[in-house]
Image 1 (tube, helix red, strand yellow):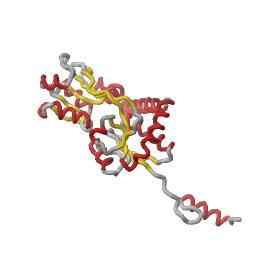
Image 2 (cartoon, helix red, strand yellow):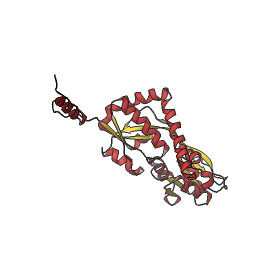
Image 3 (tube, rainbow, N blue to C red):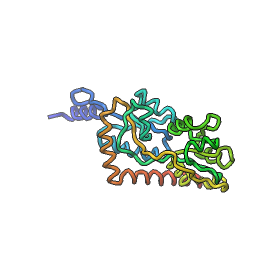
Image 4 (cartoon, rainbow, N blue to C red):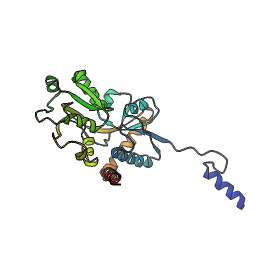
Length: 263
């Protein structure tokens, strides 16, 4: 029978991760993820919650690493992180050494926006023919690749924020602004865009550039986890949990933004 002193020693050893025999217990395997949006973005918060849940289900730890958009994939390719939480289905064509999680997070549209009523996005040939001045948000690799292929260098520019891109349309500095549709929708829903942008000219969606889906990507060393993550994600989507997490994240962010503004 253990004495009181022996019992206290055993509990203390367990509390610091060492068993009663003095052998370190194995640390929990933790997956490190990056994303192309900042930590406090509601879509980031949504995916953090989704992948935290998935990691818990498969007995893995979760850690989010916040980096600039252009560094996210570089870190994944170098094996310094284990995964990227959301890139398009076609992203694998540009980075074939990565491993795509086949179950998608969500549908993703890349769209063009305009303020001048006569400007539309019909196809890239029309953009080139009209010599439209185009802007896109920095860090969106798919848009950067499309514009570099179809638009003259002199007619394209990158901006850091959605507000800058939309404002350029209203000020006549750009004819078309390209971004992720959901990001622009979030901007109008959450960030009180009506008060930040001029009332006229009206900004509208001028056309869908690419309709695709968003997926997590893993480093090749974690390839065996891809089908397991995919199966858990599918189950969470079917139960409505993924959609609920998105609604929660958007509403929480909106309350935080407007609460800070009124304080």
